[in-house]
Length: 135
Image (tube, rainbow, N blue to C red; front, side):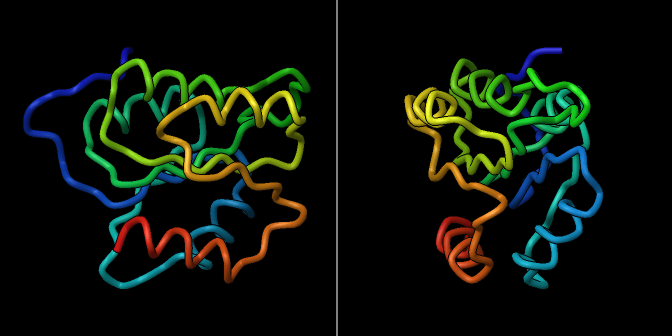
């Protein structure tokens, strides 16, 4: 499946992509506003499907979507797919495993708002960034 612009897409606010249930729940809890529509994806493939059928203002992408695979960087692949399709969406990459090289790769994208380490993420700053982006 490819990511592309399709007519009659559903308008949603936020796409959260993380393979770990505790992080999906934590992110929703941090950013939740009653008016936000949030879609959850647990894998690269689910995220592609969501992007193909919905318009989002913001995507929050875990960089490593297969926790058991040390080399997995599906979040960066999704960011590249979003760039390639020129989707009108902003992206935040979150990770507990990112390197400086990974961050440099992500920052080449015009879509990237921030590259955040999960271990040092400050909930209030993260919430503010999301609220400023989505409204």
